[in-house]
Length: 284
Image (tube, rainbow, N blue to C red; front, top):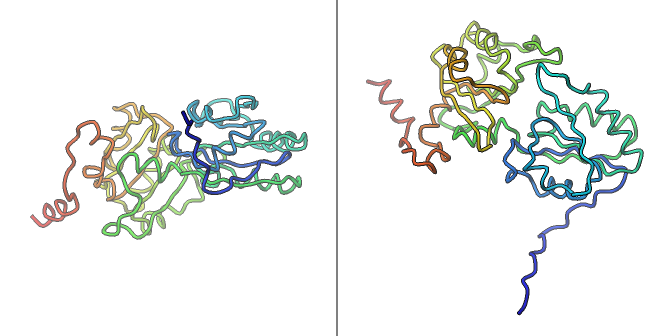
């Protein structure tokens, strides 16, 4: 009896050389959203430095003999300093280790991957960037909310809900964002949701504009709250919505009634053509 051979990859995956650091995006949480390059990195790594939002299901793809070091940052809790993480990457690379720096989402989307890569450059360490699916896109897709739709928006703005001090970002031009971004996707916004929503309303956004909060995006315990800009804070408190979460503001949120594909798998009846219904209701 002939045994079936495992299919050969249709392209050659890169070899993880000793003394290199690979900055790897793990995606929003569902291990099925890992890229082939990410799995290849995990399987070859000697050391994996991973973040708080990287789950065990993702780490299960790692080389069993790899050393795992936690370097997670969570708001309000003791966390490693960014400088110490960068120095640790350099130290391990100088020891000849294959170092996988594993980050939730994409390393270059509010992931401090750029800071770490610049530190490696300064130290003369070779590195590779492996992009991941950002929660601001993949997480919304799992909620049935498209980031763009040609009948609604031709632009989208991604912003962070806090700066390096942990406070609401002061460098954001809230009036400019409110005026120029039909859809706003917010990372790490739950802690300062009250001030963010006030800033947007003060800058001209309607309190009745639809908003959604997606907690634990793409994971089995994902939860979604559909609300409005004006009611978001009280609704989030009532529903006990907690980070990690993505927040999205804009008319694309209304499309969830038709595009909640996960809900449909559980028997939810999807609405047909919500944009047409919205137009008819406004006309009426």
